[in-house]
Length: 431
Ligand code: DOR
Ligand code: ZN
Ligand code: ZN
Image 1 (cartoon, protein in one colour):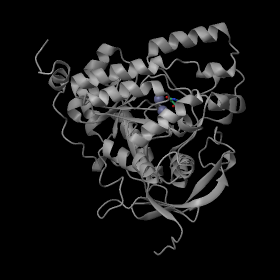
Image 2 (spheres, protein in one colour):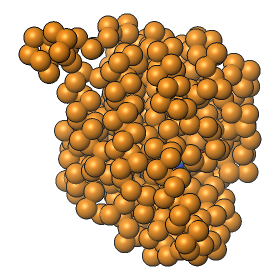
Image 3 (tube, helix red, strand yellow):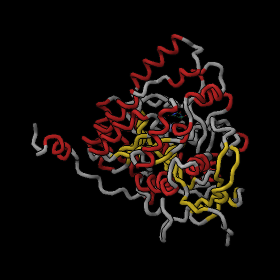
Image 4 (cartoon, protein in one colour):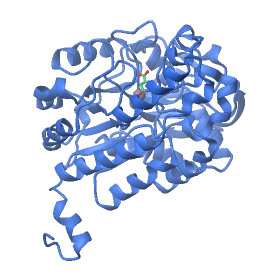
């Protein structure tokens, strides 16, 4: 097959390590077909799906069920997460061997209400996960602080003003990042900090990296491009966990992405129906919105505006996620021997994001109406067109594959305690 790619930029397909495709259990919000079609239209060739579906993916049977559904419907490649929690304590090794891309640990409550392990349980879970080499992606918010604050807010004002949605203090994330990093350092577990929303989380992340903790981090377009000023326009639609914060957080987040302190961009694609997003009482609105389809045009617009280098975008959207989760060099790079996963993009095309045009089942987003520059024309997964000339290729359903088989995480590293002590005491002796 030949293709006239004149005028188009060729990028390695994006790897979105954080999507919620809702299937099984909530397929009125999204399913593996609508979710992966949305991904393909967004130039995303690999997605990692979160385990807060029904049944919760915290045991081998639920994992096998989701694997079968994804295999029958996916248009792009995918990895599946399993919950790391007390409910999966006895399944850690089995799940690791059964083809997951990584574990997900909920330090705070969010959609699906998966119980957060205590610090003691987290230590035990990290000890079990470390020898498997699998990375643990963390929803890093301290449950107790978060619940107290929001319960009080709700009690005080059921019809709270919209900016209460952003009122969760960043300290719930700072504390959680610090605690997770400490436990990772102690056990040798690899971790990934999901949805970094504030400048405040950057210090504990930098501290952990400086100590040699194997930690990566992500932020999303909504934290880079939206602020509390956008609540008035988008109301409950913008409600997400963690919340979109003051716009003053955006520049530090961009700088962290540019420098590599934040390793990657991921969307937390979290579809809900328009009814679920437009409830009168803001506390009843389901959290999150679709993002997998709009990440690339939004981020390339920011590249055109000089907020991030073009090569840096390729790094944060594809190379870094592939490396962090053991898929490099088969994915995350255009090179001989790699999977041919590409997005071909018209970098000069100016257009307007429109909810009605989204391929997600959830056609409601706080990026509706935004002017962007950069449009995906073709998406190719393992050498096969999935989107061609802006249209879905027939018979691409079910061609997506689980990527766990190509995962090769490097050997787990020895525990780092002595090195830390060296750094602190200058000689590595116990104080
Ligand atoms: O806004 C969110 N939505 N944050 C999460 O952590 C979960 C997600 C969902 O599944 O809806
Ligand atoms: Zn989360
Ligand atoms: Zn999420």
